[in-house]
Image 1 (cartoon, rainbow, N blue to C red):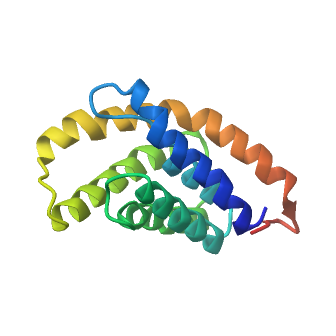
Image 2 (cartoon, helix red, strand yellow):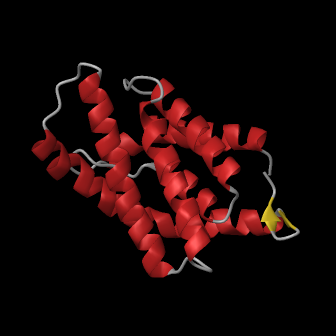
Image 3 (cartoon, rainbow, N blue to C red):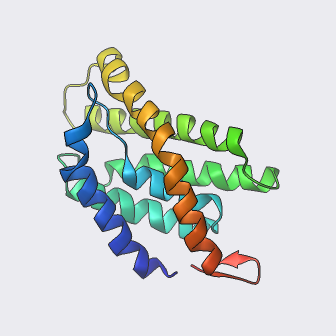
Length: 167
């Protein structure tokens, strides 16, 4: 699967994130489909591919929201580098590591987004945002990662050659 094919997949996820996900919000949190796709793809992909997915997904997500362009990409790119370091240390990603990646990655993504929004002039209330946005988003992401990871892993297995996922 080439990086060019990732654009339509991430664009569809960003559109669903913008149009459909606000309908199922609890408090201020909703599942972050783009984040979950980037996380699931990056676990078994080379670093370059994960960074390309994070950058494209973050830009597409920001173009369809009120966030400054590139604000979402920062947290996702940092997460991809963290996943790459974890992949160097462990043989495979198990259930506990996947849950940890979702929790830490969501927290990192949301905190980076709040910092960038605050630096851009938006009024941010950290305690309220953490309580009403970050915690519900973490819960949603924990539920949604399992079907998304299962689908992404099936797609990746079809495109593996010589032990590496095709970029």
